[in-house]
Length: 93
Image 1 (tube, rainbow, N blue to C red):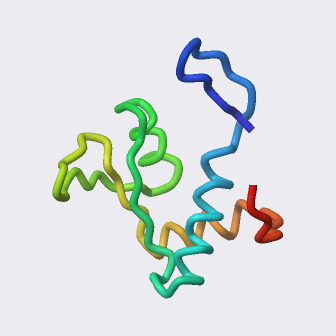
Image 2: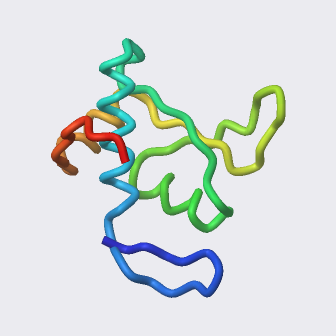
C-alpha cells in the first residue's frame, strides 16, 4: 500500500486507493446505488492515476464545481471489488 503524506510527500503504503474504492463501492451497493461512487482527488496527478488505474471519469459539476471531482461507474467498480478485498467488521473507529 502506498500512502503519500500531502505535507512532505513521503510514500509509505501502496494500494490504499483501490482498497478504499472497494469499500466505497460495496457500501454503494449496500445502500442501493449499485456501486456508483463519486469523489474528489487532491490534485490533477492523482485524478489521472485514478483515471488510468480505476476507470474514473472527470465529473467537475455540482453546486460547487470542483476541478478534480470524478465518478467511478458500476462496471468499473465491479472490476475494482474483484481485485481488491477487505475485511469489513462494521467496527466504528
